[in-house]
Image (cartoon, rainbow, N blue to C red; front, side, top):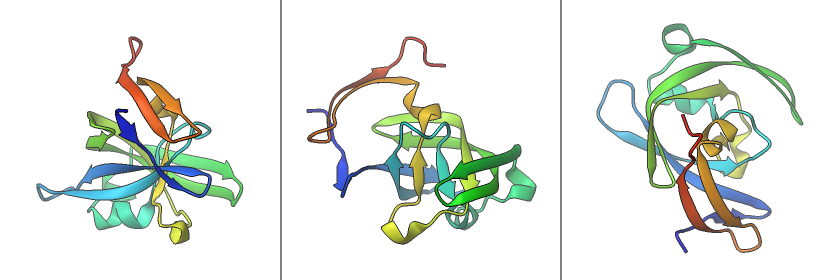
Length: 137
């Protein structure tokens, strides 16, 4: 087994490390592994805490239609993004107000997952194999 996903109810949780904008430190957040999310989404309050803003760092607007209704946010490029023992640079993150009552900061979406080949046993939450996809950008 390479990695065991944290399991909270029916959700699989991954730990992600995001950089602060102005200091050389990272902040750990929990995201739900979500193959139904096109993009990785992080709560706006956390992005603000890390020193980013829509005005200074937003590269475009983002719109979501989800169970909670329609949400408008923005997209930033994180200089680095660490998850599942891989680090990506200039990784795009959609920033939206999320309901963080579940203790998670957002969703790990397909813009991350499509870069890898994963062998996940969804019954146990074990990742038995993870490697960069041959089609990964």
